[in-house]
Amino acid sequence: MWDVLSRVTDVAYRTVAMTGLAAGTEQPPYPCSLPLQHLENASDAKRVAEIIESTVKAADDMFHNDAELKWQQLDYTDPEKGGDLRLYTRPRIGAFHFVQATLTFVNIPTQKVLDVMHSDDGRGRKRYSANLSHFEVVARPTETANIELHRYWAPPPVAGREFVFLTERRFKEEEKIQYVYGCTIDYEPYKKVTDGFVRAACLWSWELKSVGSNTVARYVSCMNPRGWTPSFMVGWVKAEIAKELIACRRVIYGQSVTVQRVTLQGAGLADDLEKLTDEEKLKMSQGDA
Image (cartoon, rainbow, N blue to C red):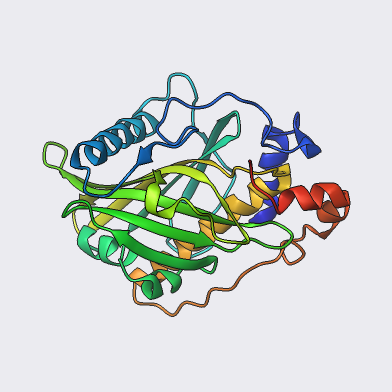
């Protein structure tokens, strides 16, 4: 899988190669653009609603607006028998990168997918995520919204990434579809970044639709890692997303799951890493000012 994603990434980003992907000031018209939207406290209902609605609008654009930036399917085959996981990408905007995934949970109700995939229990999430080092719900602005702190391990010398998300679950009655939304925010009580991590920017959404006894799922995300990132790391991230989705599906199916972290050397990227200068390796461990 890494080889496929690496080849696609090399083609898509050949013009930036080893210059790093943090170059460029263009940003998508989404609330994850910098500077992040500020939230003083979780009790500010008006501000919380504003951020959530802008997130919903942005997610809808990623799901349905293909006019300007078309999704392109990656040459990827689901490694599990009967699986239909498909991965897509679209041209980056500045330092923001896009991923879409679709898959079907056979004979699984939507509520079970929600209970596993979007559990408030960090231990449950770590069952399918090798790279999740910390998960915590730090506030609950409404009955359907959380403010969540996520920390993800990254293979050295890359710094781990930290996110503070405002999330919401929403069932759209007119569509009969369950959505889950998340967007990074500048949350006053958690302005300090954890040592060894970089505070990244991301907007994501899940669309979960019941079709007979199955749940058809679609995921979209737009992320800026906020740090100097060589092109080969984009492929590594997309490969890890696919692995996490497959592991999550196994958990939902009640199958045995073993997750493990993969270093750059283990991913076959030792040569790419050796091509970097000491200065570039240092930049990989640092975020934007």
